[in-house]
Amino acid sequence: MARACLQAVKYLMFAFNLLFWLGGCGVLGVGIWLAATQGSFATLSSSFPSLSAANLLIITGAFVMAIGFVGCLGAIKENKCLLLAFFLLLLLVFLLEATIAILFFAYTDKIDRYAQQDLKKGLHLYGTQGNVGLTNAWSIIQTDFRCCGVSNYTDWFEVYNATRVPDSCCLEFSESCGLHAPGTWWKAPCYETVKVWLQENLLAVGVFGLCTALVQILGLTFAMTMYCQVVKADTYCA
Image (cartoon, rainbow, N blue to C red; front, side, top):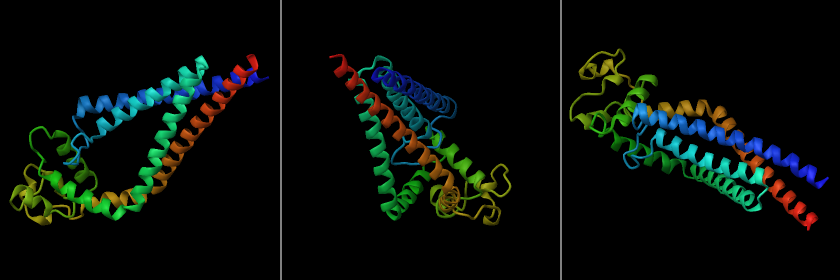
C-alpha cells in the first residue's frame, strides 16, 4: 500500500516538475529572444542598468529550469536529498517573494519617491550610445500611454537643455515634432499614468500572484509528501 502511494505521488510530482521545467524553458527563451532582438529592452533605471526585462526573464527562466530539473530528478530517482533540496529551494523562493511583497506595501511612499528620482536620472541616458533599450522603452511607454516625462513633459527640458521633448511625446507623430510648441505634446505624467493603469489591472496582478503562490505551495506539498513516503518505504524495507 505504501509503495502504491509512493508511485502515485512520484508520477504526480514528476509531471508537475516537468511542466515547471518547460515553463522555465519558455521564460528563458523569451528572455534570450528579447536580448537578441531588442537589446536591453525595458531598461529604465540608471542605477540598475542590468535590470532589464530580458535579463530578468533569463535569470528567472534559468532558475525555474534548475528547480524543475532537481524536482524531476528527485521524483524519478526517489532521492531524499534531491527532494529535500527541491523543497528548500522552492520554500526559499516563496519566502523571498512574500518578504518582497510585504516590504513593497510597507514602504510604498519611499519606493515611489526613489523610483521617480531614478527614472528622471535615466532620462539623461535617452538617445545616447549603448542605451538602445532605455530609449526604446521610453518611446514605447510615451506612445502607448499617451504621456510625456516622469512627472510632466518639462522633465525633458533638463535633458535637452532646451524647450524640447522626444518625438514620442507628440500628439501626432512626425519627424522633429518634439521641437514644436507644448500644445502639440502629451501632458499626462508617465509615472502616474502607468501607476493608475496598474491599479486598474490590480485584479489581474493579484490573480497572477495568487496562482503563482498556489503553484509553489502545491510543489512544496508534493515534495514533502514524497519525501515522507520515501522515508516510510525505506523504513518498511529495512
